[in-house]
Length: 114
Length: 114
Image (cartoon, rainbow over all chains, first blue to last red; front, side, top):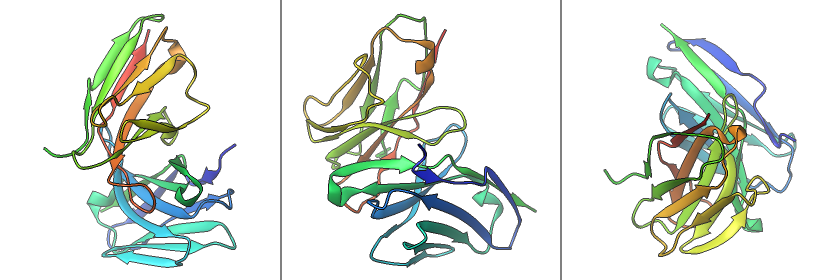
């Protein structure tokens, strides 16, 4: 069963516009959420995270929003740049419960159009 | 380069052979994780170490898989009697501590079982 779901396999956005990537989770024990970015032939690179006690975290062009009641989070990238084209993975964990391993979604391939 | 290092980058082996991968984490990181990623999927957690102690193992880690981190520094992942279904990217990650911190990934070892 897929505990972390990214329902959009791909997303195309024009350069300069906002990119919104969505993620849903089913395990209510998850209390830490992360976004990773992955280029081909490279390992995932950490982007931004949020703990369950917050509903928003911002870092430069990247903002993550968490809606615990809906078990939903989203990553906003604004403005989108060509270098943002990559696969984005949503991940979750329950470190407070001793489950430090990350559970990943299947990823969303973001394509930034010039 | 002070990132997570994995060797080899690529491995082709015949079905039934044993293979071993090595991961060198970031030097001051005491947590080390192994993940597996197949095509179209996100990374799947296999196991992690706190220093030399293996603290968590996924049910994906069958008895043909064994991981060690003998001195709390580098780690090895061995797969015995490889099967075609073991073909995947094997990713290693490290973090400075458990809890609310991100994990830093290596570039992975691509295993192909023929």
